[in-house]
Length: 251
Image 1 (cartoon, rainbow, N blue to C red):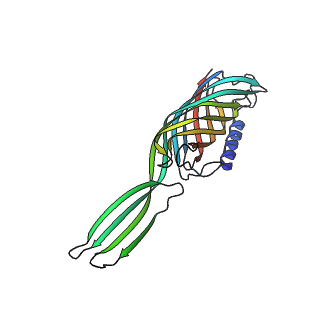
Image 2: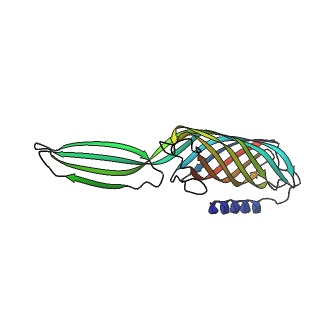
Image 3: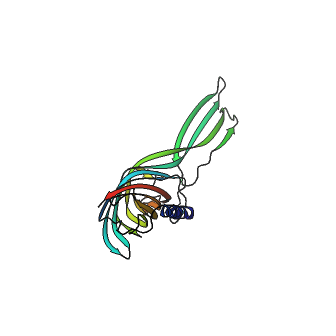
């Protein structure tokens, strides 16, 4: 998380040095519409979550309405919707093979099960054998655990949010942002005994670069958390650091 914050600060400084530091007019819009893409390659315990190795990827849009201007900055109402969202869980695939040592020929059966895990998935293997006894054939059982991933489709809506933009007289503007809402997935996440409905909130910082008075691009880094608030037997919660790229327009 600290590396992410320093990365945003570095991008801001580089862009600020390449553009004029003083502008006579405000780079400030009353109404702004945004399209964006987000991605996080893994999750780890940051503030409240305990689920590890979860990936998040989504496409969405946002609407921002300026509420008040003061001291060269804007405070705005901010709402986001994510109609296309994918969440990936690490799963442990357990393959159990049973071999009966019957007189004519061995008889082998196998069974496979898939289970999402809270912590990192680690492959392993083991076996156990029972010799023939009292007329019963010998039995050998082999267990092979391998790791895979399970992707789940979801959608999210965050109707409560804010955006605070600084240095609105300049084409390069740092900002902080936060939203609160929910997400709904096609099956329970991040575990099978969790919930398909989860509460979602995030906050972070970024840099917005105005290409004109109406159009801009931005890069952000956010802390993102979702959990079901103990409405299901399992609620490990998931913390991700999200990287976000956006294109905005308005007036």
